[in-house]
Image 1 (tube, rainbow, N blue to C red):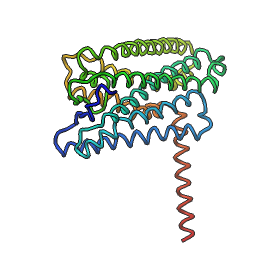
Image 2: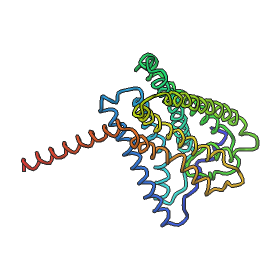
Image 3: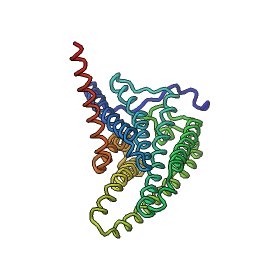
Image 4: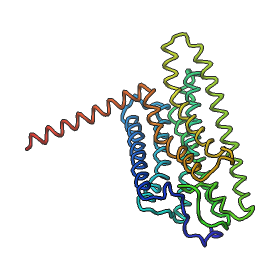
Length: 321
């Protein structure tokens, strides 16, 4: 990182120039952030407290919610702080940490979604081998592999990106620190080292995408052979939320990184990046809770228990008075 030691901070792109709009964005971001915390927190608590949900499918879902909390907490609080204080700056090392954690959470989440597709494939196409292939130890190993791979990628990309000499100022056309925006500030041809890592990541990402597609082709072929309509409905209720989350994750990321340069602009890039970095972590709990009856039942039990405990505490306090 010594090659860019003259830069002490980066300037992020603001969402608005007027003070009124900045405060409006702050309250909007605060609402989205609290909704994401509440939704993912409820799913984590419901899965942890309900022993009926202690299965591989919900173990991976719990980890997915934790990653969603991490990814949205990496970007949105800083954007809220900048909007509230009318400030654009982020320190050099703060930018490096933000890039590292964002890349770690997002890459790990993508790998975990791939593992979840494998889980659904084994559960539906090879149910007799489910306990053998996806026992508790195997689930922990797969989750640990996703975390370890995401951590390694984040370390490599962050170290490589911030070792590149920066000669084009310190203004980023984004509301958070992102690799493509930092590479735009690099000296001529010095970004080629990072480009090699990006190509490798794209190839691995495409491989995961192909694996998910092939898994669901096999799953839907197996579903069509189920004679009962109730059985097909149960399988769809298990698979469609995961498929919707995968589609939301991939479509927003592709829109951000593969849109034509002819339609690119700082404002459009800002909106699109907001869609892929903020919307999926906030919407994922809603997607899973809408279609999954077991999650809805667990949440209903959890809320009912909390309500009963609150009533009992109130009654005890009233009696003591």
